[in-house]
Image: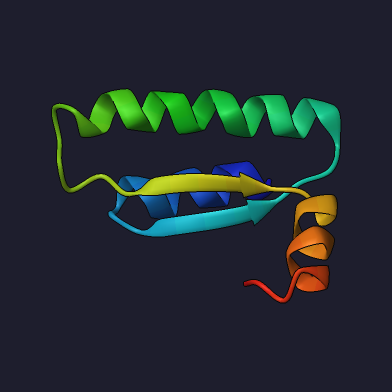
Length: 66
């Protein structure tokens, strides 16, 4: 459901970050990210999806980054 909401927002031009740790969800989000990237080549107003995991968030927090 998270990926579906992210895709709808990105198709409307938003830049969306999703946090997913589950494998199948990550694969789906990555697939949709690539689809949106291809679409943006023809429709520049399309936004994007960035995928992060809890580990990425914790590593950045520990390093003092955002």
